[in-house]
Each structure stands twice: as structure tokens, then as C-alpha cells.
Length: 394
Ligand code: BGC
Image 1 (cartoon, rainbow, N blue to C red):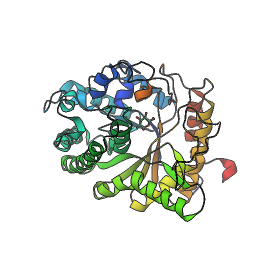
Image 2: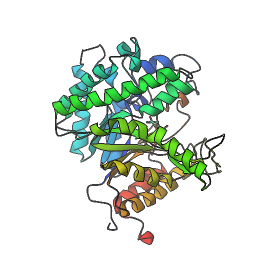
Image 3: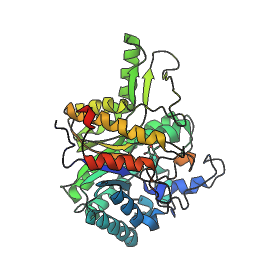
Image 4: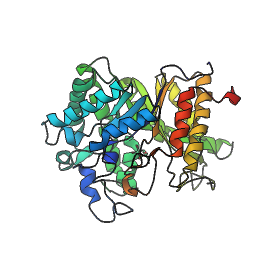
């Protein structure tokens, strides 16, 4: 490994439609209206208004030196009624994709980022037996429309996180608590949805690469003793590997969403994190975990992208985020040096946005909602400009 990033390495950031576009009418936007669901009482009604301001988003991508953008195409806009595909919305996304390409920004597209159209919600949402069929029809259509312009598709975003938050913790839509049976049912629906989408997308355009944005936390044993090591292995298998193992035959790349690093022990509490003062909210800042998850994903022998990584930092000075990015890139340097097939990195997120049940209280952006760059955007820009690992570390 030389001292520079590979020439075609993608340096981007990520967003999702529901979190930035505003003006949506899907299952989440209906749910948000019930008081008490969103901690700061807000809704996604306008959010960052990217449905109207997408050109500004492309400008800030360009100004911060990025060459890639991961975003989602909102299913409820494209197919507002079952089987009816809205030409205007398709044209809207086409304009946006063309503008990205004109600016030499490689798009990566997600087709399901936690939200579904109302017509699907009305018949049971992701639990409906036909969810995989409906989803693959939509996915196939998108591959047909945009497959000549977009190569990289991180089709489903974090199904396992959604299952936990929506069916077990109950703090996300559909707001069910401890519904283990439904969670398992939905788990298998997502597997079928991915597999069927893979087939329909590939038959629409065989050149595209179909992947996933899969949440992978890093786990380390609290102590180097067999029971902690066993528990760590089990947790990893259950949360990171099991889903991937089911779909590995239908994957062209692995997208990793990585945020958390935990220390595991074989007694309660299983997660034994000594959380330092450095964190914002309850998220520990531990950049070293990213290497571990890339190493684990390497066992599948597929190209790897970091499809999301970042942290909530609501401090005015934006201190944690800038330092975190630097440390993360030091970890990526070591990973690449070790021979990992890592092709790109997408920071979460381009702009502050609607952070699901936390509303606007958690801030993940390199830019404010008014598109003003924060200090961390400058840090990221410098790393990209140099395309170089830190001199002192070579
Ligand atoms: C999700 C994003 C979310 C981010 C920060 C990921 O789980 O894909 O939608 O905003 O984490 O919480």
C-alpha cells in the first residue's frame, strides 16, 4: 500500500430522503404527528428542504471536495399508489443524478431507508407477505430507470436496526415493544426482499452492483478470558453476521454503517462500556472499532464501502466531529495498508437533519441545515485534498 488513497477511492457523505427532503407522505410522517413520538416535538415536514434545495446540497458536496454521494430514493414518492409510478418524481431524481454526474460526483443509491408508502403501511407494511414482491417491483423499476447512470446500489438500509427499534424497543415506527415474533417475521421478509430485489434489479440492468448498508458495531471482550470471548463472538454473529450470511449469495459489495464500539462480558450487563467524558449524548467515541468491522466484513471476499459513519456532536465548536474524522482516517489508512478491499467512505451526514425519534436534537452534519460548513467539513476537505495519509504516520 502506497502512502496515498487509491485514485478511485470514494470520499463522500450520506443522507436519506426522509431525513432531509421534507414534504413527505409516508408511514413515518403519519406517525410523527402523534404527540410524544419525537423527543423534541418536531416532525420531518420541512427538514432540510432538500426536495427543493438539492442543488445546494450538490454545491456543498462539491465545495467540500467530495466525489461521492449516498442518498435514498423515496419509495412513497415514486409509487404513491400500488403499481402507479409517478413520472414527475422519477424526473426529479433523474435531474438530481444528472447534476451529480455533471459535477463528477459518484452516486450510491438506497431504495429503502426505514420508510414505506402509505398503501403498504395500510396492509401491514414490512410484515405483509407480499412486501418482498412489492419492494422488488419498485427496485427493478428503479434499476431500469437509472441503471445506466448509477452503478452502486446499497438497496436496504440497516434492516436489523429497524427491527430492534421498531419491534423490540418500540421507539421507532411501527412503535411495537417486545414483539419478538413480529421482529423475526420482518427479519425474514427483509431477507426475501433483498434477494428478490437483487434478481429484479440485475435482470433490469446486469451492469449494476447490488449491495446493502448493513449496521455493524464493533465488539471486544472486556477481559481476555474464554467466557467474554465467547459472548463477544456470539453477539457479533447474532447482530452482524447472521443477516449477511443469509444474503451473501446475492451481494456484489458490503456497505457497512458503523457507529458503535462495545465491550462485552458474559454476565449482566452484557455490554459493559466504560463511557468516557469524550462522548456526545450516550455515543462513545471509539474510532478504533472501524478496523475491526472492516476486517470481519473482509471474510466475505467482496468489495467494502463504509456507507455510514459519524457521530452526534451538538457542540457549537464542532470539536468532537473534526477530531473523530481525523482519527477514523488514520484507522482507514491502517486498514488499507493491511490489504483490505475498501473502496470508499461516506460520512454521516452531509447536513444536520431529522434524526428519527430524536428529531433535530442530535446533530450529525458536516454542514448546518442552512448549508453552512462546520469546522469538520474543513477537516474532511483537507483529508480529501491531500489524498494522503498523515505525513507523520507514513
Ligand atoms: C441510520 C441513519 C441515522 C444514523 C444516526 C443510522 O442508523 O441509517 O438514518 O440518522 O444512523 O443515528
